Length: 352
Image (cartoon, rainbow, N blue to C red; front, top):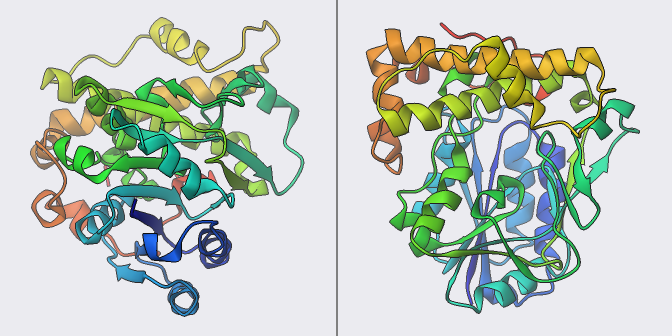
């Protein structure tokens, strides 16, 4: 079974080097996987890291395209992929040695369209106490959507299709093409209203076609979490993207705008992200609720007032990057000019 491992990156050279080391160390025949790095406009020494990796990894390709958004790298890599299975991981994760072998085992079942494994969190600094309130379930059945933690236990099992997440996302190339590829995902902070439902769309659409999503405990990755991600500002920024994704899904389903949810509705949506407890810190709740509302408002405002943005949201698919990247704000973006939303430092700019 041939794999394509695709990594989209931007200005995280040191983290990328760690990821590439882990991919290159796989306990899997080197002739049965290729690696594609899609550089989304880095201004640091990412290219040097990739040049070094090319001398260590037998089948390595480097792509550079500075148009904003993780989807650019995903789809450019998909166009070059030769593997039957395409694996998309982030530049801040390290797959375990058995990662590709376990995925091969999962995809031996032809009914499996997507596969994943544990997403473990490797903290740079001790996490704050409030993180426990965002951690859902118990070990063996636990998630933390804020940081992408996924623990579905010690056995191979099928899981809901929308729980195969971008930090550890493997899919049959044919299935990905059948569902029209990915939807928009990570964006610079100044363009956050262009954020969509990314890989979650792929899972849901593949499920609608009858494909299963399989979890394999030996297909795990370690997701490295820098100290700057452990702030309430970062919580707010993350839930802005959640609000954008929710609005995007509904706008595409209905084809028309809708009212911003009421305060009571926002409270109800936010409550799903917390453990059942009366002791959730008020400032944490406030950041989650404000992020959700601001993200949804940004999408709805742009959809109602910007015809080019409406075209972006309602595209039939986003596989042809040139065809869908026509909005003036996307075309005028300069790489390296804005903070990444994950830093928690980028201000929401709903009307650039």
